[in-house]
Image 1 (cartoon, rainbow, N blue to C red):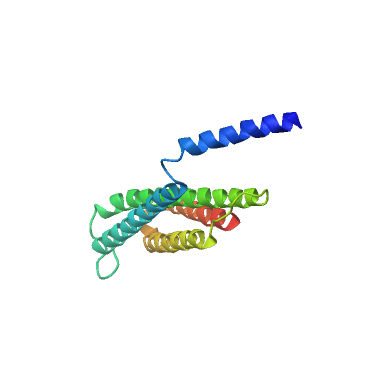
Image 2 (cartoon, helix red, strand yellow; image 1 turned 120 degrees about the horizontal axis):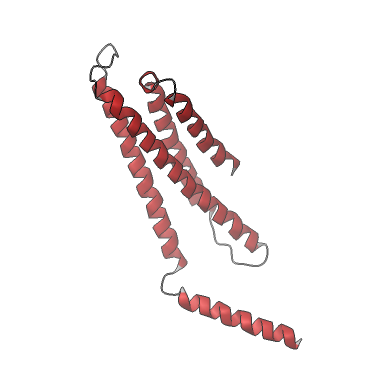
Length: 167
């Protein structure tokens, strides 16, 4: 019993030290900061999609043929940047899902579990909406992308969707 009392005192001391160290920034601040980063990433991604759409519309004439020689060179780079940002946003969502799962596990051991699933669901829905918009833009310009880039992009799209669904 003396050993249990000593271990308990040590653990409570460590808990107090951790709470004292992290007291200046509450957990809600970190969550809000993470939410703002995610929202900013989605806004950047939506801006990229609008750029792709504008570039596509600028480069195509009435008959759908490409008129500007600059468009085919800029478009793949813009799409690759957008896909890279989509994957970064996906990683943020997966990280948040992992944190939620861990908190749920700890709740089984008596930890406080206040996490609401609605914000996480909203994140997934927003990411999926942007995913669909980007995929539509890629499919609309599939002929300009070439036979080697399109399969790679589609594979990356499938990986994003499957990892979200699996987690």
